Image (cartoon, rainbow, N blue to C red):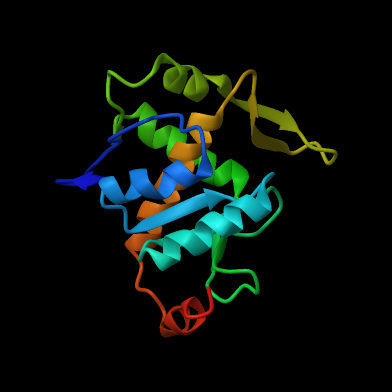
Length: 173
């Protein structure tokens, strides 16, 4: 949620079913959602279709470690709108925003949320050519951290102008 230029996480909650997600999103007035495409791709696609039917724009997210640029929005993918995110760059941007206080997380969030955020650690190591590279590794469950990253991507997407071809594609979802 964007309030007066600040990003505020309204809720961190573990839901027990994909069926509960669209209900919770409607309660909070969500207009744009990014969904983890893997490992349950078929369940993610079903959720995506259900959200579009309810008027909530949704994209499946695939991480890439070797793409140029940070994000690629594909409104016309054959299986529905998707975003490919450069994993290291998108996680670095999200973790920086949390670290400097630009993304505010409720103090009463479940302890698991904080544990998941701190499970991600930035690793810098040389590649085979000897150049230093950065990547994010986890040393425990990190699901809430990735959920926050997907929420950041959705927020970025809503700030962009939506191309006309998206409207044409959504009719088939």
